[in-house]
Length: 242
Length: 259
Image (cartoon, rainbow over all chains, first blue to last red; front, side, top):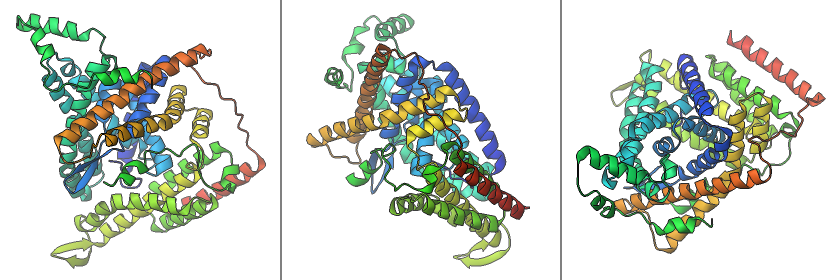
């Protein structure tokens, strides 16, 4: 997903850098010093997790996980992803210096969009719905990122249109894999550590009450026990002595 | 994907770079960042083939001067080239212009070929320059340098925290992967894999978050007030002025050729 230096036109680079700077500025403003270690550790975790390659037929895809970052961090996803991109560019040689703005925008803006789109969905008391919204968050973020990458290429010249279209088609399987992985991760996170998704600790009861009130269902407790996919609860205890 | 590749990039080596001490290391880090940035500007915004070729040669010279690990650097640059080779092959055929040759009923144009070559040159020169000027710093030094260059404080702090914990979290990840392997988990193209990896990532994040809470508590216990202080004073020495003069001359030459 990294675009290299030299492929894009000057206007696209400038606009991308300006928008990314605005996003990072907003993200930094919304993130206070107390949350710095948290965002930093998460940025590192995502950096590591994005090197997981999942087999897909004869080849493999690597996860991007910007959807999950967005769901967890909101606007703070901008600085977190920018930092990860800077480290990748400087030490691994992915991407380039002048396209840093465009690359950051392409990855972070979909994350923020998914934050606003799926936030309500992932707090649904029905695990299946939450998982579907997680899927939408994961798959949607990759889809938007691909669209933005294709758009940046297409805006830089008509000669890139074919490449832009191919990028879109090639990433459809990635979207599906990413969506399912994100869905599963969301399912686990809301059980084990709801604060992670910026939910309060008793969010589940509250969601149940509001849900049953709105739909006037008389037996709300049946949903909580019959989760189709049960996340491994035992691991959360293990995590405390890490 | 073989296991070796899955793990190759997760081990973070930013703090313990293995390259021999070089002339580049003696330069002021601020100067290195500024030169790398200017270099990228000149190369990317130039349309002259000659300038780009000189740029690539300069970048190569810098890489040799920085005494980069040749094998590792080449592997990275080639990985990037493989990344863009598809794009570059398409360009001659999708750009209208003077005919050059035909393959399977498709016409390649001279303009497209030139464009593709220029993108390849720009990308390689820019990445090589970054790897040799900035990639040779350790990541903490990079953070301090950015702070001295007036990059927003919070962003620098975030960078420093990220760098510090990449190592720790990478090890945590490997530990959990090994635990899965010990339970005979093999990745395949199936839903079980995707769900398990989703749980793996979720759990990695949970552990990371809990770790960050302990870090915050430990730091507060030691009197952390929300900021780190930069103790290193960066001063420009004689060598830096000389290097800056050489770089200025070089950029003037590139600018002259571009016009």
